[in-house]
Length: 151
Image (cartoon, rainbow, N blue to C red; front, side, top):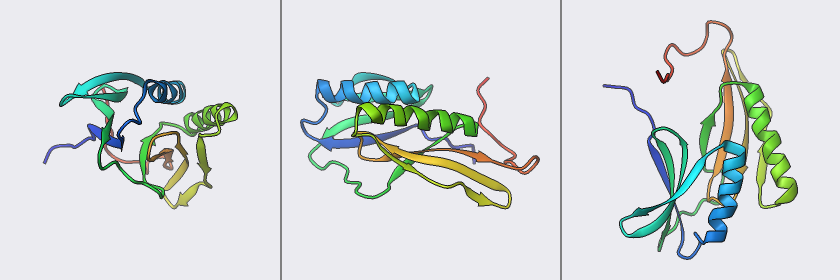
């Protein structure tokens, strides 16, 4: 079996949610904190919104009569290379939260295992799920044998 990688995720909202103002708000946050590009796109006759984290990955936002309900800690993990990158994103989220109290942040103590330390926080802003921003630190020589690389 070949290697697998996530391609996209679709999040659905109640009809009427994806207004121009809503799109501008989410674009401002996710663009400034995560550096995601965003655009509108037509999907089967519906004007949808799409976030583009990187080449080949996207998060599609669409309206539906049966939108997603995520009252808990459902999340999508965003893996960063280093602890300092995670901390810089947390700082950016906190700065944004100072001007917009709709930003929800959950800070966590590091999860420490014998061959792995996970440094992370959760953030949620107007979308129906949290994003788990994290890095995985391994002692020298204990990391995974395989990783994704663009050439």
